[in-house]
Image 1 (cartoon, rainbow over the protein chains, first blue to last red):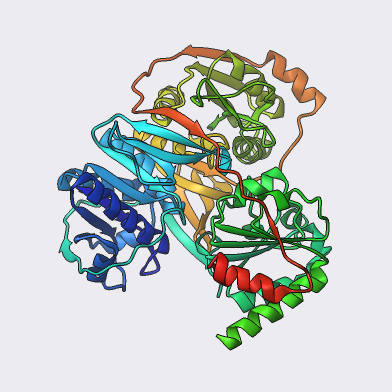
Image 2: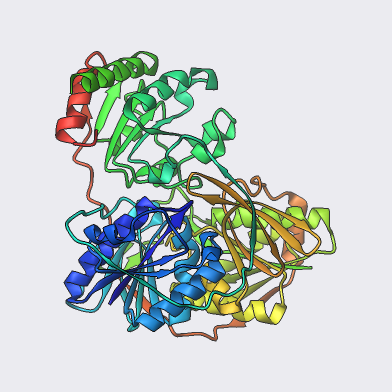
Length: 320
Length: 247
């Protein structure tokens, strides 16, 4: 059986988990086995509706203490559940919590693990999972030799597959160890889609010349319903907050659309965004290296092009 | 108080990524090696900051790798740290690496273990979490700040769409990312001092890899950028809608 860990926060199932469920369901089909979900803690969502992503059952460890993420506790409960349910493959989203707990679960199960998987495994000759390496600059096909396997799937690499179906929901009794950490405060960035979960991202670099010029970028993001990001020099100069920095040493993202405005495209920046499906580069320098990695390019002055693009987006939305 | 900082050797961020031997090995030809940036800028410098506040803190560095990792660990010692341990195991299986570090960690009874969020070569982000299971200690991943209050660690971590502040009693394992500390450059005094700091080599003791790399592959080259006239943004919107189908 393929068991998918369903990550949640604030009573809501995370988008990355819906993708992990879709991936786990496709893998189970490939292996000729069942796909089931594991949820720790409580959520407001209707669990039976998760069946439409391809799982037949949700095992629910309904302990409210699990609503706060504690890697040591979560890993212990998930590993015990996997053992009790006889799971042979455990799938996680390679998001913040998946990264924190999946390797610990693998250790507890004596399982080989591949994190950052970018596709379904090939299973005709060994169990081989392809993952991104060198910050998205290459792929590696990795064979897992152990009988039990753990995979953490990169966000936005497989997609959410929706079909028909309802999942049975069953309570699962697992002993929850006492917490090892205490969460004292949570600060959410209000009203914004988390950058790592965003489908559309508009990002600015030094070409915008100063934080006072960010209005045109924010207008475009608003018109598109996109999240905002920036390059490292911009966050280092405190023009924009650190949590917007994408790149090798910032956040690595893989949205459907990444619009880079006034970013030259240094290799370290590309490492954070090269898994984006479509890249648009707006830069007045036709020699900017980013154009080589782009799908669409506009050579022009951002201060003219960006407001024009915003107007075109609004016009298109009004017409649709 | 004792702090263990895990150090990994990685290719420079600008290194050309290529493969040899039928795409089964990373091509090291002409590659500059660096301390994995997450290990250096964030975890090592954080440990140094703690020691600057409390000089009684002892910092040990550990790396798992061949003799070719020694210039990297010396460079780390030039930034700070009292002594280093190299475990002579060249495996790139995360579990093997984590078990080697866990053996050192058990022997050294460290109060804090810092790792980078991930390495920039294999991007596996496994070591901290695996140490959590192997040592049965608390683990906070993706930390963006770290302070001590007696025997309690106060750690801010990234969550999707925000930040969370946690408290945990020592011992603790923490993986570090941007925000933890600011990058430093080793000075001449540090470089001189690093030459005489102890660097102990421990022979490999683990060989139970569960994974093996079969093949590397480079991503397919982009078919080439399609340039859009800056005076015609309606066309760009049309392309994004009808061709790329992303808006």
